[in-house]
Structure formats: C-alpha cells, structure tokens
Image 1 (cartoon, rainbow, N blue to C red):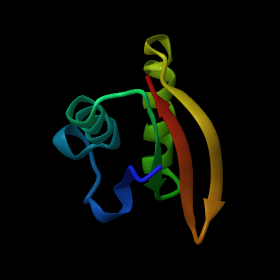
Image 2: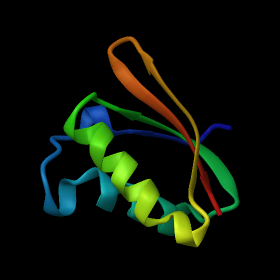
Image 3: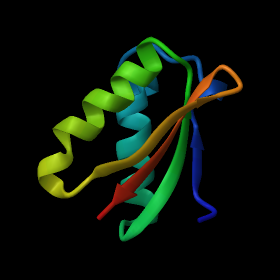
Image 4: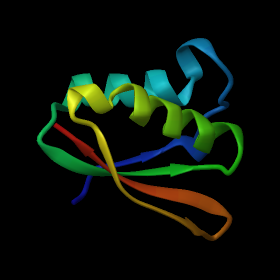
Length: 80
C-alpha cells in the first residue's frame, strides 16, 4: 500500500479544501480497488473523514482501521 492522503498539509475548511472533496477527488483520479492511508488532524478533519466514509459506505467504502499516532488520526480506508 503506497497510496497516502495527508490532509494535515492542507488548509482545511469547507468547499474545495474539505477533506471529503479531497478524498473524492483522489478516488476519482486514482481509481478504486485499493486500500489507502489517510492522515487527518483530530477534530474537524477526522470528523469529516468519518462522515465521508459513512456517506460513501453504500458505494463500498470501508474504514478498515482507525488509530491515533503522533497526534494525528490515521485511517486505513478501502476504496472499491
């Protein structure tokens, strides 16, 4: 697994900079059938990743693992 999305390097917020849009764009650009590592800050970013994964669960997106490491929330997410 070499695919990683580091949300901590972006400004955050809503609209085009939101974690949900970033994840959706990554999925569309790289394709599915893979597991990706997503790094988010605790709080708003992590909440938005959780909400996006829940909203996309009907499409087959699954959170395989979620843990806190070095002050960040690390996800392993399956993209179908």
